[in-house]
Length: 444
Ligand code: URA
Image (cartoon, rainbow, N blue to C red; front, side, top):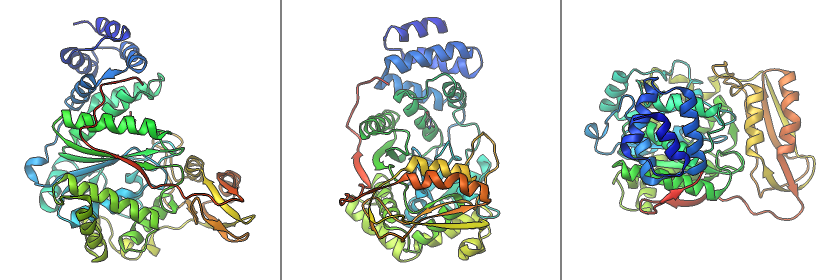
């Protein structure tokens, strides 16, 4: 087989065979196909799309390019979740203990922040001692023993995706639905869970800005899971405004702790209860979402979910006194409240701007590998649709320096838009995509 023939076939809009995709991905992983040919192929995929079968073949080829963990043999109810990324999204910190408290097992590998969207690993590292670098053996041991693991990627998972993603990043080929879906799903499949809830965000603070694009991505990933012998549900959720009130690592850990104590913001609590319910249904621990919802609410209200969060922190070497007494977690030098300059209804809290300003403050990275400041960030005190009187507290900046504070302040003010007329609150969810809603061919 020759790489050039495969590129030409895709350029001409034809369907690649399983053998051609397997050859291309394995040869590229072994450096036998150069980056320039892989880039030409990725562009042909971006322009011409792929069939559902090609996308599944590509996903499996990338998953099989490295280690594949199999958690199904070790647990009856292994379940995972994946969020496509957003601002203030600390869902995993709440949802994982919730479903573990209900009898599910979660062996989850999370990532770091990417651009203006935060990452679970960065949040966890706000807890002194918490290890996000478990080895594959440590991961499996903890999974077998307590069914509750939350760490960074272990072992050599989907190396083809790592290579291809870096290439796509610099060749204008990130924004391709088949490539995004196969990239995400290859890592999820390699990480071993049999059931996966995909939280696909839609809005100005998300990868997919429109609900239509998010729906396409969700359908694609659910279909890939089905063809790969896994079960998945896609939940399309709003990312026009931040989720919850806190953006920034320590602030988000504190908010997750409050939520696990039943005292979290309404939107975050509701979001987590729903995602957890879909996870329980996928694992067959509940027959319906209504039944699952009852179970996760009980787990929250009884304190069992909180105990599972403590169990996780202890198992991964975190100093539990910091989550028992969150006031011990690091605090920014400057805490600067900002008050509403007028009365009115909030019509927008622009999630992307809030996320970008969190990065400016130091909560995220502008360059790969950059050190972050766990203590800094932003608290928003209201949601779209709220009515405020002039002078009410609008948001609070947690900054390390006056200079950073002044850099972030004007944009954060602009991120909040006002209306004289009542404004509908934003929905939390747009729709749910279940197995069976198939897609045959996709462009982009
Ligand atoms: N996240 C991934 O893992 N891959 C993509 O292509 C996009 C987002």
